[in-house]
Amino acid sequence: EVQLVESGGGLVQAGGSLRLSCAASRFSVDDTIGWFRQAPGKRHEGVACISGRDGHTYSTDSVKDRFTISSDSAKNTIYLQMHSLKVEDTARYFCKPLYECSRAGFLLDFKSWGQGTQVTVSS
Image (cartoon, helix red, strand yellow):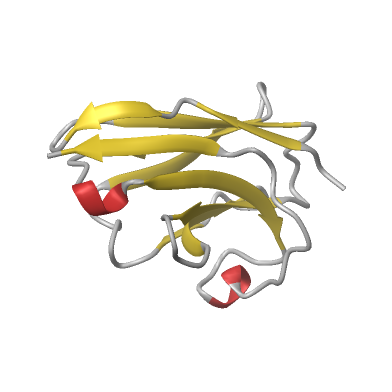
């Protein structure tokens, strides 16, 4: 299974920007990677995903106009560029492999999660 390590989180004021990185052991045409987030007291939420096969991306409605997912296959890294951050974006962000890049693709039951990277947006 592909190994993933998240980084790039931090503290930012509302309206600011951050870029998260997901360093993968591989990112090939057979891989699809998704970003999730978990706010305190809430369940994990799928945010955005990207397919290694054709570059297809999907973003949930709450971030669609503000977050952009991209990849650098040479670096095996998937990025989540976040703009116009809101207080409600505060969460720990994780990346995970998916079977497909779609809303349904996020409906997986993962047994465990990595350390993730914390994003805190202040008002």
